[in-house]
Amino acid sequence: MDNENKDNQETSDKNELIGKVKSVKTIKQKYNQGKNKISRTSSKIRESVNKSIHRKTEETAERINDVLNKNSKLHNLEKLLYLDKSHLVKSDKETIFYKPTPKKIVIFESNTQGEVESVSIKEDSKIDLYVVKYTNYTPFIYPSFSDNKIPGEPYYMDENEIWYKSDNTLTICYKNNNTMAFNIVNLSDFENLAEENIVTFIKRYNFIHRSFRLTKFVEENTIDINEIIRITNKYIILQDKDANYAIYLYDHIQDNFSKMFLSKLPTIELSSFDTILTLEMSKFIMENKYPIEQFEEHNGFIEYNRVIDNRRVCVFRLKI
Image 1 (tube, rainbow, N blue to C red):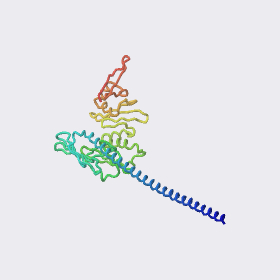
Image 2: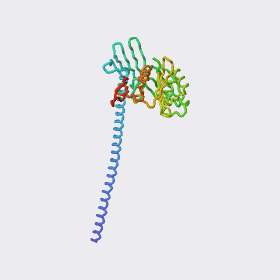
Image 3: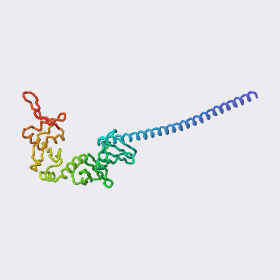
Image 4: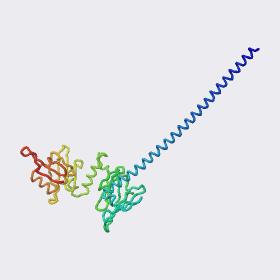
């Protein structure tokens, strides 16, 4: 009997111990589940906070960049018009007043984004109005005009022109005295004109066709526009398919073009040809038989050097 009671007691103790162990395991499981839930919640909170911080950081960076970009554009516009902070009279969100001279007032007007979009220049009793366009941070000003009805987006601009492109159509707006003139070019009229060549080709094409004299000359001499290296109202420089060079120089006295050939171009900037290809200077060069191919450009001068008695001597020097 005693043994039976002893066995029952041991069984009861074992069951109680097993129950306690299970209870501990259950508590531990619930604890771990709660811990994991808290960890997941905490992770989500951290992730949300980090996203919020990142978003606010990006927004702050964008605002700073926007301010810096506008300041760069404003500074470049001031430089373009020879203005500085000493000329500043008054400014607010919409208008900036400058007074560079006692008789001259310059007014910048901004759009709703705070970017200068128009300029008024008053000098004595004369008032000139301009619109401002930008390519990146570079401003260009044009006589006041509206582009609201011009199809397409700005495609190219320089100090004289702004182009708008829509599909195969270019609307070219260019300065004509104190106003803007407009010309429409259909790109489909030009076969095999690659995108990267549009600006160069169309600039030359337009330059020629705005001048009756140049148009007639190019047509009569069957000049290929693609062979033109530089063209002005006074001369044309060509390079043919055999890499030979020709210069057509306009003689305003005889009202015709003279022609000269070069085996190579001199080591000068293309714009420096404006200096040596005036009618008077070109005659002087040809009369003295100075070979243009051997001209060099140094420190703002065009030079021709010869070797005399084993010494290099400058025999011709012209300030650009």
